[in-house]
Image 1 (cartoon, helix red, strand yellow):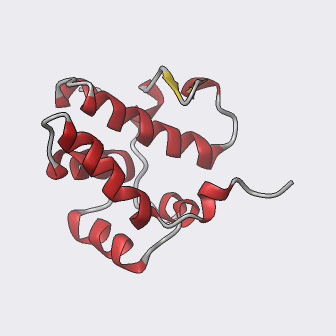
Image 2 (cartoon, rainbow, N blue to C red):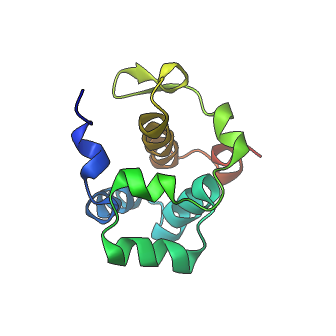
Image 3 (cartoon, rainbow, N blue to C red):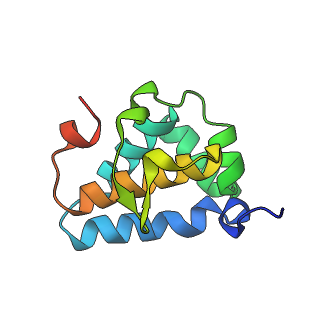
Length: 116
């Protein structure tokens, strides 16, 4: 079975879309970065280095310093699929991020998004 094409897609190509989606709804790039850092454990400098290297999604999540254990609390539907039912680990991480960005764009408070 071949890998889903998003695994080989550069995270840096999708990142501006996350930021644009947030900014269209009055949120900020720094909030997007905070969400990504919370989820993956990357520092701001490490995140920027990953973007500069054009790291693909699979490597981006595989190399994440510390995936947040609270990410298991992320529930809901993204792209018509319940995130808690996704079996494939890398796809689950990608959809967790998608769900968090959706919540940001919908105006949810950062404390709720970051499962505090």
